Amino acid sequence: MAFNAAIKSVSRMDFWRLLGHSKISFYHHSHPVTIQKRNGDKINLLELVQSATPPCRLNPFLFNGHLQTLWTTVKSKDIPIYYKRKVFEAEDVTYAGSFAVDFVVAPNELSDDALPPRTSYFNDSEFESFVALDAKPMLVVLHGLVGGSHEIYLRQVIRPIVEAGWEACVVNSRGCAESKLSTGVLYNARATWDLRQTVRWLKKAFPNRRLFGLGFSLGANIMVNYLGEEGSSCMLEAVVVCSNPWNLEAGSLALQRSWLGLHVYSRAMATNMKTLFEK
Image 1 (tube, rainbow, N blue to C red):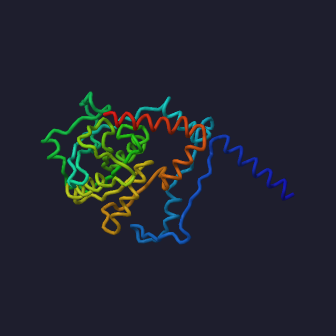
Image 2 (cartoon, one colour):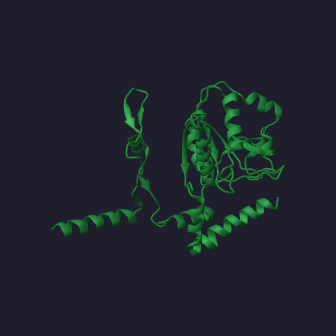
Image 3 (tube, rainbow, N blue to C red):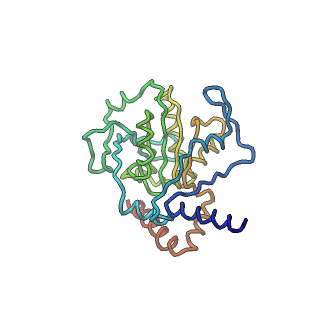
């Protein structure tokens, strides 16, 4: 009886998975930190994340990460996010050079052929008037290895956030998103200097805004390194990291163990990095 019940349970599970109903797993500390909600109630971090996480419903034909990644490169709905770009000069001479920060703005007809779609530069008067005293929450985003503010995965996440009343900006790694390299200082997983300068500037320009962080892939690794370096003085109130390669060496070795990793993913990333260096 118990065996038959177990078989039926597995069969039901496989049926729902065939329809794209995926299981969500939560990995957490044995004693999750307790957080006080605005109404005074207390909830631990695990319960908060579980309550805020929607069910995972995937396309049943895209049943693994490889197919999902491939699909975004051949077929993806355009998400029109508009940016104004400001180029900052590094304040720390150790990391001399310039970097571009793209701020989400209202839809407009402006564009620059030298920049990604729907992106144009701030002029001086626009940027001076951009400083505000509003209390809107603001999201600071870091992209992946050789991505940028134009990437579809960034725009997919940014759109509902700005529609909910948030402000957002993307710190482009040097040379990415058609930004110009002015020195030989590029970036790596420990390249927290441009993020640090951006967060400090945002806190000064928008003193009433609460700042939050979001990082993808290599940007996620940069983000957590920044958190560790800043410690208790960190100006970001909360951070989410997605697909973080926590151990870069282990991740690199894992890529080399499969044909897809070695000949597709590694080749694509290396080709994009080569293009960046050739600038």
